[in-house]
Image (cartoon, rainbow, N blue to C red; front, side, top):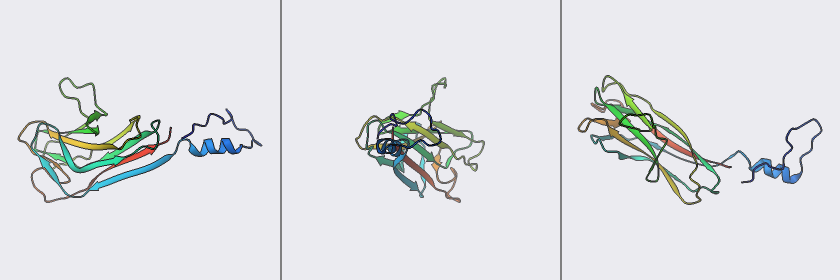
Length: 175
């Protein structure tokens, strides 16, 4: 979409925009499309290697290579007592929104609570610049901090007494 380069630097009373300026303004800074999915079933893993969370991926095809994609993901994550749920956001097969401050592990989010009965609600907000007009998939992967310990999505780690939902939404924002 067009950037409003033909707009006046400031507006004063009495300014009238031309048709070209109105079109520039109409095309700038707007949401072009939204794609979303909600996961209502549960998912568990005992893997210390990242695995895709089934049902937590969404595909969008940007209309312009200059667009950015705003990603909003919310999930319910639980884990075995004393261990962490490690969460990554990916664009296709590439980790994005990664920390660089961890001494041994860098992830998008992690959740650690003292009990498997306590669940955390990590929210991921990230603005990506995929620079493509090809179909692009954003997804969530999860792992446990210690192999063999359960990490769960949309339920407690130790049982399925309570259920929840998680979602991932992507929005194309014009340049």
